[in-house]
Image 1 (spheres, one colour):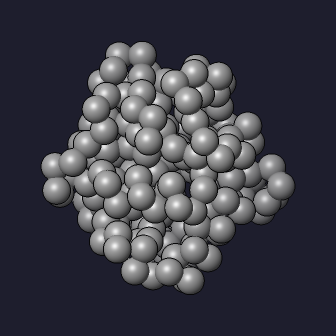
Image 2 (cartoon, one colour):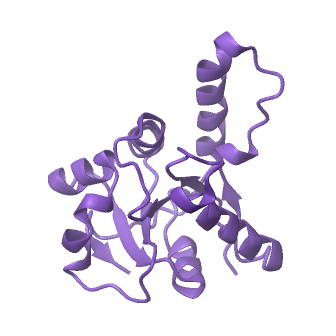
Image 3 (spheres, rainbow, N blue to C red):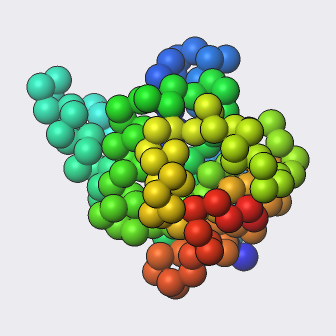
Length: 175
């Protein structure tokens, strides 16, 4: 049973265009959570209520609400796919805050893979957000790299937790 809360950061550009964004992968994870609530606990900006925000305060209010959710999280999940805008300001901001402020272990899930080998990170370099590449280059964050499969993702999310003090070995740990 996985009791860890996971903050999910993904490229939200084009969220209304499901075929050209990672939103449908996030929705797939939400379905897993609905089916197996004892195994998954995802937190994300999709859960933030924007209805009470004034247009001129959306950015700052959004960030405050994201930070609140990150403070509750045990780990950070980043989806990596060829649909991702690796330069997304919002995505990279979320990754930066989760790592630098909350010291969350990062799980990078690679869409379209059933297994990973040591070369997988290098082979998918172009699909990783700028901040993830920066942390790997400096080996300055604890990251586990997993294929985007229900069972492997569940095990990785259950294994790493800032609150339990359990981290991957380094920035390129293959799980």
